[in-house]
Image (cartoon, rainbow, N blue to C red; front, side, top):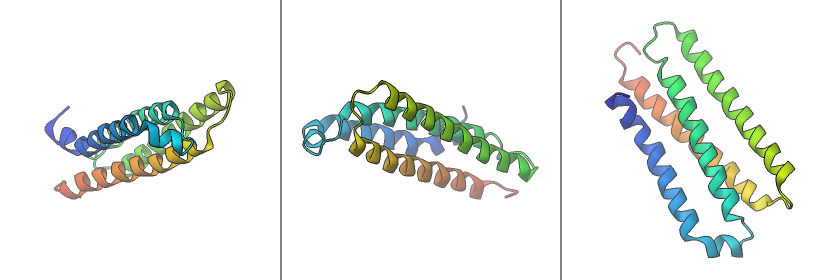
Length: 132
């Protein structure tokens, strides 16, 4: 992985670490609000992992001269994210004794955060290209 990839991924990794620290440190507050900490921590890890994969897939296409390759990579990243999230949600619904809706709403917000960070990092890389 080259230096440009690491620089672009830095924000994604920092957000993951900060959010995990906040979720671990605020266990009492989460319990008071009715949010299951373990659901949020596992969901955060899944969302980080799938965002990382989607970013790396799309990042690899930025050097290609054909713009359709980039568009296909963006759609592929979306489809991968969608199916991983759906499979994780169905797994949670199937195996959990009780469904923690507040935790699912927290994960919805985290999905939006990771997606916006991924897109902003890719846009920064795209602006830095010579032939963009």
